[in-house]
Amino acid sequence: MEIGHTKLKKLLQKAYSAEKAAAFAYQGHAASVKDKEVKMAIRQIEIDEWDHRKEVLKIMTIYNIPISKFNEIKFHIIGKIISFSCFLIGRFMPYYFAGRLESGNVCEYFKMKFYFNSLNIKAHDEILYQMGIKEKEHEVYFLEKIKSDKLLPFFEKIFLWGNKKSFNNVDLNSQLPQEASDPYCN
Image 1 (cartoon, rainbow, N blue to C red):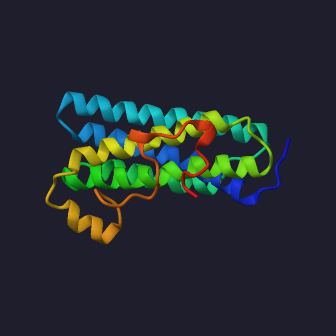
Image 2 (image 1 turned 180 degrees about the vertical axis):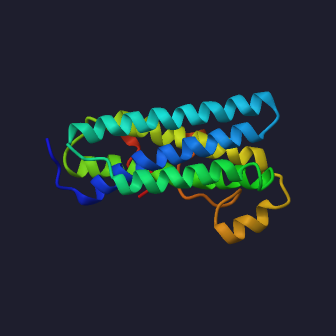
Image 3 (image 1 turned 30 degrees about the horizontal axis):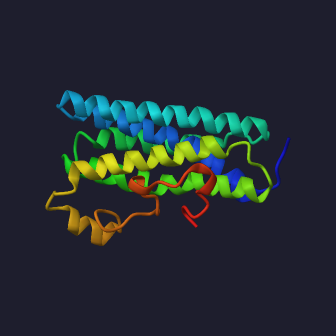
C-alpha cells in the first residue's frame, strides 16, 4: 500500500536515518563516561534508538517508502562525528545536546501519528505514541544530568532548550493516554 503524503514519507525517512545517528552518538557518549550506571543508562538509550529505527522501517515497508540513501550517508557521518566528539567536548555538552535532540525527536513521532490519522490510518498510533514518550524519557534523563550545571542558563539562552524550554509539550508527570494525545506537539 502506498501513501501520497509527502511530509509523512520524508519524516519517516529522516527519522529512520536519524535514529542511527543518535545510536552512534550514544555509543561515543557511553564510552566517554566513567560511571558504570550512567554508562549502562546511555547504552540502554542507544538500544532504544536502534529499536525505534526497526519500528520505523517496519512502517516504511508497509507503505513501500524507500530508505533515503542521502539521509543514510548524512546521518551516518553526523553520528560518527558526534560519537567521536564526546571524548573532546567535556562532560556538559554531550548531555546538553543529547537532551536538546531528544526534545525535538518527541514531536517527530507525534507528528507522524497526526499525519497518519489525517489519512484515516490509526494502525500505528500505539507504537508512535510509545516512541514519542520514550524520546521524552530520554530528554528528561539528559536534562536531569545537567539541570544544576552553571553552563545550562547560558546554553538555554543560545540553543533554546533547558530547564525552562522544551521543543515539545509532553509532561510525563501528567501524561495523556495514547487515545487522548492529539494535543501533543500541535
